[in-house]
Length: 187
Image (tube, rainbow, N blue to C red; front, top):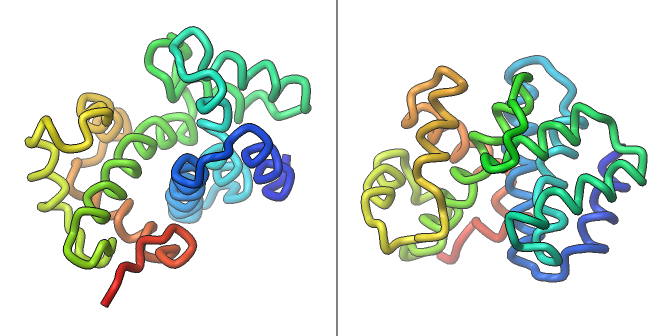
């Protein structure tokens, strides 16, 4: 599945700009890490872009990502992409065995959290976000309460990286695509 096909699928099932931007943000981060590891940037990017494409229609643990997986099978999506997407939801019980699957799990919640941190900064800019500010906001349970902090911590641990270092990489990736993600901010 190529990026153009993945984007069309995301847009077919996702109408809200926020959820589309989340897909773009996770795609951005996945591509960043694929480049770092010398892996298939297109495959990793498509995986990030599609990981929540079904969430708007099936936002329950019974629906997401199971319904999306059925659609991906029908559309001929490769098994490794589908397995990574299934594994990004802890409750599915699908093992994350590949680096791509582990990275998707680690990047998903942290990408959303870093975006939330950026949007509450004075200029609404990812360029104002540092790992220390992410760590500080993680302690505030009322802030972005829908983000699972345990998944953020466990995701970095499963990759064998320190959380602040992983957050720095996510921030760097998002900065590189700040305009498309609406995270450049105001001046």
